[in-house]
Amino acid sequence: MQDMTYCWNETVVPKKHYKKLLTKQLEEVVADSVSVSMVNAYYKTLVEFNKGNREWYVSALLCIELGINPSKASQQELEAVNRATLAALAGPDGGLLAPDLKAVFDQAMLGA
Image (tube, rainbow, N blue to C red):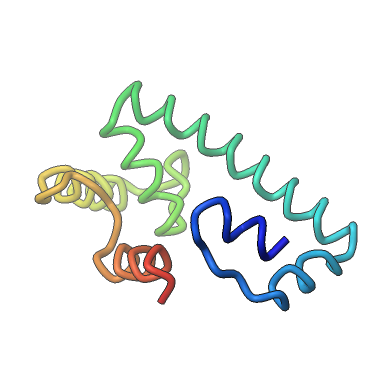
C-alpha cells in the first residue's frame, strides 16, 4: 500500500499509518461513515436555508449559539439578536466565522 500511494502522487505515507487504519474496528468505520452522512445532511439543509434568506439564516444561527429560543425571547433579546445579525452581515466578509476558527482550519489543511 505504501508503494501504491507513492506511485499515485509521490506521497510518502508511513506503514504505521496504514496499519492503524486497517486495524480499526468495524464499529468505528461505520460510526465515521454515519457521522459524515449526518454532517452532509445538515450541510445540505443549511445551504438551502442560507440561499433563501441570509438574514434569517444568520439570526437563527446566532439564536442557537446564544441559547435563545426566538418564540420565547423578550423584545430586548430579539433586538440584540437583530443587531448582532446586522453586524455580522456588515462585516468585511459578511460571515460568522471567527478568525481564530479560520486559523485552526487553515492550520489543519496545511497539516500543522
